[in-house]
Image (tube, rainbow, N blue to C red; front, top):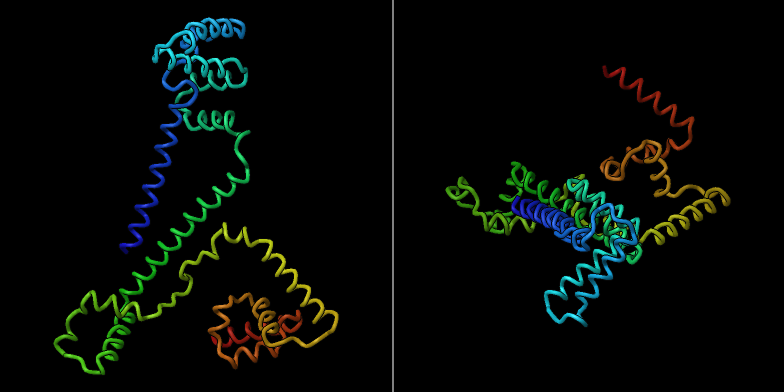
Length: 301
């Protein structure tokens, strides 16, 4: 439970940092806290020629080569930035919209970065970064679910009985009755718990091979392996007309019954042999099997 809480807190902290960065960046776009029109000394209805004249006039006054004042140098940078925004009709239209709709900061920020950095950013790098972020959250979510399932199992009587049995085994079958009535020490319980291999169906231990990013990277290999498997299947059973092997007959039976691999493994060997001998992958045999199961179900009722 402590691990799952720590993972949740880490996720919340990460999301908070990202949101704070986005909110902060939306106020530092365009001309920061200044108004681009005010920096150039023009009104919002000024045309392109008026904006250009105002910029040249202010740039001559505050250019570092003509004005050594450090504050004037900072102002010159702001003036140049304001002119870059207002001289282009597209970016000026975006800026005017941001001034009129300050509440839409996420939308305005997205438009700003798309206009200024979209053409400079490699799409492949963006996709790789997105896959890394998604895979990281997926991996943390898998560990959270797994730890929660482990914590639930550890509270069950069956798990505690296994711990008691393991403790007796390690102590040579000798146990103190008074001690047995008390709860097991937490440190001893953790040590014994590490020796128990918990197999929880539906909640497997997280693996990097199941992550979306890893699967996409291995997609060409997976597709090639799948095509090779289908090719071998077609050659062996459609061309050469060879009899199905036990593994392939099991696969066809599972697919016909729509049974998962874990459920198939839990079925007895005699039942498996009976199902495979019925050749349920053939439509007529499957229909006969379904009819028999329905009759058996009605008889039991």
